Each structure stands twice: as structure tokens, then as C-alpha cells.
Image 1 (cartoon, rainbow, N blue to C red):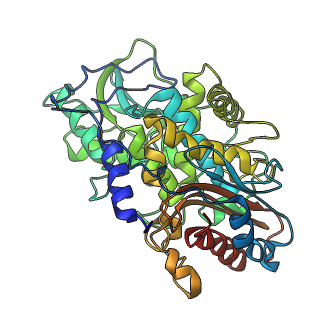
Image 2: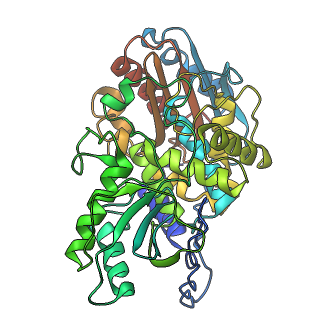
Length: 452
């Protein structure tokens, strides 16, 4: 059978993720939010969402053929002799290749696959995160609930974020004309605990890999949009930016913003909400957004009644995946972004998460968000040379890289049109670039596999 064009598959997955109902709202940690009336969903004729292409009708590869195809590339020197991996038929789960498939290794950012699945299961694809302003006397409180995608002003990006400018405008409208000078406080009590997880190193902050995490930050605490450097005090910087936005909308702020917890009886005067969770998951996976992964993990923790901390988020994600019958033996999570060197995940766990997509449309945002080889996200600059170029556009996978750690987990349609799920991890990578090339070669061989 000839290769099924991946564009058809991707288009169906995008349509599937886009079909849905009105947003619902998740408010982790704060009692000060009003619940708006959901926007009515337009009536649709016919099915709510299109069926996924049937990739299970093509001939299934033979395990012996897959083993022969991968025989040399899985022994690449760049992988350090410590490769663990698994390949299965996505439709049936039939094991086609295994090498230490139940070995738990540091997964790096492939952990975001686990975070995505847990969040979609617990919260639903339409859930949102909010940022609000409440009023008590002549004091305004800017209350963060973990929407790290909040920006200072509107941007032409997808998904379109909530903005401080819109929040300031709504606050000004609520207060009315001729507003008296107000004090501004900022409330970050929706999250608790340290801003550093076990297994993190200080270099993550200086390199801009992640911000000093807080429930209130704007533009992910970057000194300017797109910059790597981050503000040392994200919440204070966000409050200062909001004070300027209030002034621009006619609400004078007296003095510098100060931290403070909003009174329970305070009146809500403005709310903005993030894009829906499905869009957040897509962004998190495509760009490997660490701040967003930790925010999503904490939202799952609050939903499950656990503390909004690193430990609470990790426990909540673990619980949700176990409830989905994902094998969790050997899995240890210290965060939900994968930055911790102490995280442990098995290829079998990653592949089980990837297979959820084929059995439950709740998880359709996962394949849509996976970087596409040679085209998008963290795979945009890979699969650009040599034999691997033939797999550009054919492999969709989450990457993972830490010192000595390299991982790749995703989906690929083989040459006969069969959808395969795979995960490969090593904790003995000789160098990041060469290890990535070695993992890319494995996925490229799967794409070229006529192993039936």
C-alpha cells in the first residue's frame, strides 16, 4: 500500500482538536472569581467532530522486520550504550520492538506528554486559567491563578493570550469614570512551596529555561517578548506592568504595587481567561514550554485536591495517569516539566500515553501539539540532512534534552500507512546534537519501514 499523506492525517487531527463546546473555567486556588455564563455553542449539523483516518487497515509490520530495520541505529555510539526503547502498533498495541522498555530513565521534556494527558483527562479540553482583579475599599488586588501565557498587550499569536491591557480596561469600566487613586496589591497565594524542584539547577534560571515560578507572571517574566532573560521577581514585574496599564485606562495607582492576599469578601471588578486547555497543551508540547507545563500540573493538583506545589502537581499527574490505566511502575516525578534530573519514566509509560489518542478523542490535542519533523517546534531544525530528510513531515514527536539525557517519543506512519507509536530514552548521551541525530535516525528508519 502507498504512503498515506501525513497532511491528511494532520488536518483531521487539527479539525478534531478544534471541534468542541463553549469554554468552562477552572479557578485553581482563589475564592475571588465569578463564574460567567458559558458562551453558547453554535448548533452544528452532523457529527461534532470528524473521525480520525483509519490507519489500522494497512498491513501491520512484522516485529522481525522492525528489529532488522533498527538493528544498527539503536546501537549508535552517540547514545552511549544506554538506550531504552519501545515501538508498538498504535491501533492494537502489538509490540514490534522492545529494548529495556520497562527501564526507568530520566525523560527530560517528554514528561510533558504525561502532564498533557493528565490535564486533559482531569480538566477537559475547554478548561481555562484566569487572572482577576478584586476590590476592597480603595485597594485593588491583582490575583494570579497560574495563567503564565498572560501577556502585557495583544499579540498576533496562536493561541491568542489574555492580556493585562484587557484586564485593566475591564477594571476601569467596572470602577466607572472619575476613579479615585487606588493602591495596588498582588496576590500569588494560588500557588505555594518552592519555586525550584528537586533535581533542578540554578543554570535553568540564568539560561532562561524557566522563570522563578509564581501564579502571577506576564510574558513568562521575560525582559521583553521572545528574550531568554527573565525578571528575578515575576509577580512584582507583572504588577508594575498592570499599574501602568491601569493608568493608561484612567485609573491612577497610588504608590508602588506591594504583595498582599486579597480579602475573601473582596468584589471582583475584572477577569481575563487563558485560551482553552487544548490550545495550551498544543503550545506546551510544540515549544516545550516549561513554565506552562508547571502551571498545567498545578491546575491538575488543585482539581484533585492536592497542594499547588511541585510535589502536589507530580502526585496529581501520577494519579490521573494511573486512573487511565497507564502503566506507572518505575515512574517517579519531581516536577511536571521534565527539568528535574531525578524524574524517571519508562518507554512503556510514554507509549501508553501516546496510544490514548487512538482510543479517546479527549486527547486529540496531543498529536496536534507534537512537533513535526523538519517543520515545527523543537523539531523544526531537525531532519534537515542526510537520510533523515526523507522523514521530514512524517514524524511527530516530543523531544527531551538534559545534560547526558536525550529522548524522543511520538508517532510515525510507516511506508505501508500503519501508525506506530514509539519512545526512546538514553541517560548516557555523549553530546546533545549527536544524540539527537541518532534518535532522529531511529524514527526515520521507522518511517521508511516496509516491514510487513
